[in-house]
Length: 340
Image 1 (cartoon, rainbow, N blue to C red):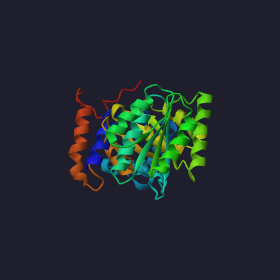
Image 2 (tube, one colour):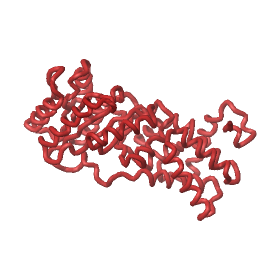
Image 3 (cartoon, rainbow, N blue to C red):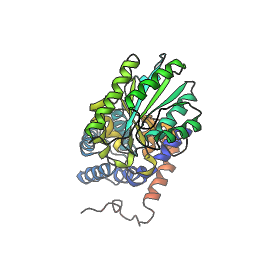
Image 4 (cartoon, helix red, strand yellow):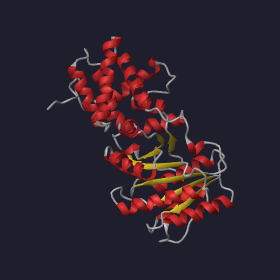
């Protein structure tokens, strides 16, 4: 329940600005072209992206035609089903597969919350019986090692660091070797933030990737890209470039609680073929939630856990509608949407 609450709370802005309004659209009467136009505009507003939005609209149109859906609860359930189907993750999450040692590279642009995410993930897995260690391969940013040390102290997780300015690939090699010798079974390699447009920096990241490959069999077992949710669709361009350079396997989405662009998650899955593995739900050490498709979709509509009955969820949905229309006199069901 607490986990669902964290995810739900992080989606508050997306829910109030977009998905709470979808309840109004689907409950505004007859389903017609105006309905689909309003729905399309809202989904694009959530930063779902045009291709993914059009795919969802067409899937919904087809279901309405074939199944004769008319009631609001039927339409909402159909939409949630379609949204969940977009969020199908690979069956295997290599980070959690049993092996003697697992190496995880963590990459991303400057300011995405990468080092913070490393600290949170180390804490998350330590609490679950793993023996994590953090390798400071971000050797260029002056405060990077100090920042990782702060998270090391908070999580009670060791850090292996070299001198500022050292070669990142050499640091990754030394760190992995030292971690193996000390008996750690989960190694997080924190790399320097870099713009995906900087060719030389991306080549440097490829060298770190190569060192991981040579140091441990089949490593890196996961390459997690940290994306800043408020950047929305711009993050997809970043993700594509990182995916091409270092074979990104999954995404950690940060700062979701500070944006209304939660729809970008669906583009990450559908357009990039990358699963979201974790969501940052706040600034505290424990504010990290493993991604769960059912909880995420339910959180978009402010519902309780998936098993809850519809009549138990209605007060929450009503609350969202009330909040989203607080400054309006809702005499017309479609009055919230202004057409140009």
